[in-house]
Length: 293
Ligand code: ADP
Image (cartoon, rainbow, N blue to C red):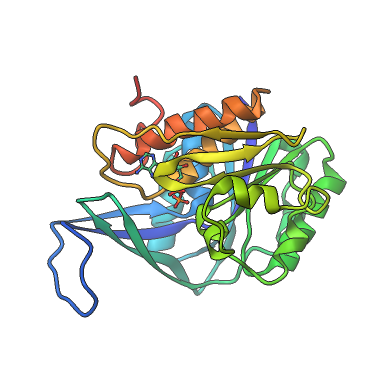
């Protein structure tokens, strides 16, 4: 077990379940509605806490009922929040998620009106206490780069992973420092790539020197290790895919857990795929670690 700090977003998710994804301008009734805490980093921490790690969340939260609910939820899942930054007044980031029952696909509309976590916010956090810091690239890429430099300066032995979900201005500056960069398939597809290996091969190892991972939905994932070797893993689909919200976040928790235990990149890919596959077979993240064979 390791102390792990996650820096990124925690959200309030409103999940509407529909039989199939609606046509544009259509009107459909949701069969069920679930309210839950989401956010990429928060989800990854949730699963890492289930895997036995001592997790803490550093993000910005709004002190209003939804924000307090988010904080309470994280604490209840064993994720410390005293490293988070409270903002008042403000509104909690909210994701409106349409979950199609026939495919398990999730379509997300996200609303956010909160400041991003800034490098100055790190001043109050003792990063030496953490073996691993996981960050996500936010629009303030300069700050994300600076945060990594601060972590390196203050705690050179702390491992850094970075999640890249979308193209962002200045992103290239964020990619040099992390030990592990976790790319979403959507990011690679937005660059015109049709397979994760082709995308990973296109990255200049001097610009992105760490381990590189790219997920590819139901087609699995690929990774390049520190020796430049390519690894590929198939997805491990459950009997029935019911909910893919947070599959990537769960995959990342599996990767971080394996690497923190000193396992190989190849093993980490398999662990991520197994855990993410289980997640797709259940609603939410509760018990995802314990629910497998
Ligand atoms: P994100 O949640 O970021 O969109 P992906 O859709 O790429 O991420 O999925 C991340 C991982 O979750 C994949 O690499 C795969 O292991 C697993 N996964 C996603 N969709 C499925 C699916 N339909 N069946 C089985 N595993 C899946």
